[in-house]
Length: 324
Ligand SMILES: [Fe+2]
Ligand SMILES: [Fe+2]
Image (cartoon, rainbow, N blue to C red; front, side, top):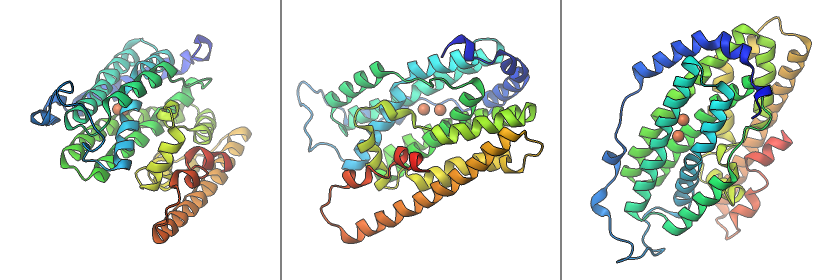
């Protein structure tokens, strides 16, 4: 992100709100120790007993979901760079950025320790995936500051649900407990960004509506740079861990409702048009989610040996977004 796209005026105006929300975050965030969530007694040396594909207790899709969630968390250096560049290091913004980074780092720590000790994932493939993902990096591209705020609000909520649902799907109480704990962090991150966007709406509703509408139109999960992401996202959607229905019902709409986006008055013409387009996009997303659910239900009924990823590739998040 270049310096020129950073909206210093907005950041200065939102500085008091950032400080208030940072303090609220610090007063409710609970300290937790990643090592206490890992069943260390299951650990064995890999040079004595190498990893073999029969060792994981997690099913195929649960393994894929854990891999995607961990590789997503692994890319933290890129997110840190993006956040610090977008929001700066001044005052509460800097304190928040560093605190957020420190909290996020726990997620990859606990996930990797769990997956290694339980042998629930191929350690070599995982390490190669980490190298590939981190070298690809992650960028918020040309997004202006206010749109980055909207992006991180949606992204934290999406990540919260992805982690939470992966834990439930795993059918492993240890994994479920880890994912529930991480989800609590993601929820508090979402609340910070959600309420920063609410403050930005108060300052300039038209600019905020345009940014939110643009973000709903272009949203990608942060894991989009992971090798084989489309295929993996399709499997995750097929399992109901994160699909269009979750995205529409549990990520996009709850935030739009909280912001009262469709009740805002006095918007300029451009913002009114952006909001109309957003409404149409949401309707299309809802319909795409229903079509996906119908197809998935048919598939489950037929239980035929069709390669699910091939068919689902057409309806995974990115594809549906383009058609919406
Ligand atoms: Fe995280
Ligand atoms: Fe987070």
